[in-house]
Length: 263
Image (cartoon, rainbow, N blue to C red):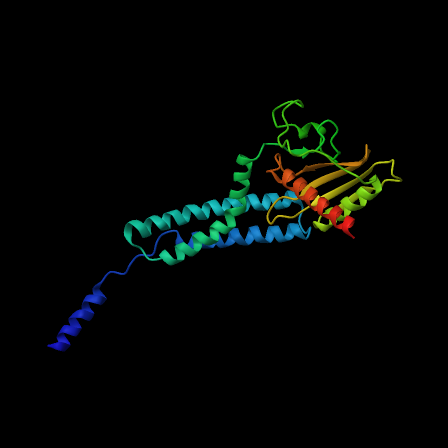
């Protein structure tokens, strides 16, 4: 009797239909991993100047396409799991996390484009901005408006310091290199009555586009004045990075000058 009961229970288990695996889960997981891999590899290659900006942009656009395809596949898998109770919920959750990491730079860029003013470049002197090679001065105005438009960042103005142009040039250069920015060109003031200029390349935030900056130091009443221009030359808008970098530079410069005064 017992044996027959056990046999009948085994027969019931063997006769139970196998749960179907969710459709799209395998392709979705593969595309999620590939998207994350391409994004990370492109960021590393860009950091070490192993790929041009144009090539990196093309690769990232392709990664975005793979990511969108992976998202669609995972949506199909999620529907099967939710509606039909298919296997694969754990794999789906892991794949969604991986895909979210891979798409996060694109989501952040889209959010920045919506939040920040649509400008190609920013400067502390809109009347006479420090020149960035290859960038027209008209791009410092708000996109679609004339040069008399209200400044997109009213707090970004030139700074005056009770220093000579030579001293301010030295402090500005130290602040910029302390931020990890690369000096591309520079013209040191010949004396305390002449101006100086520094051209910089900035790559700081992870997965953020590289930027170009121009510093200009001029004599001013009671000392010297420094103005800064910043742009992301590879994009039509700078996603707020120009203002972020100028503010960060001025904060570092203030700290640099304060430390020098204390020594």
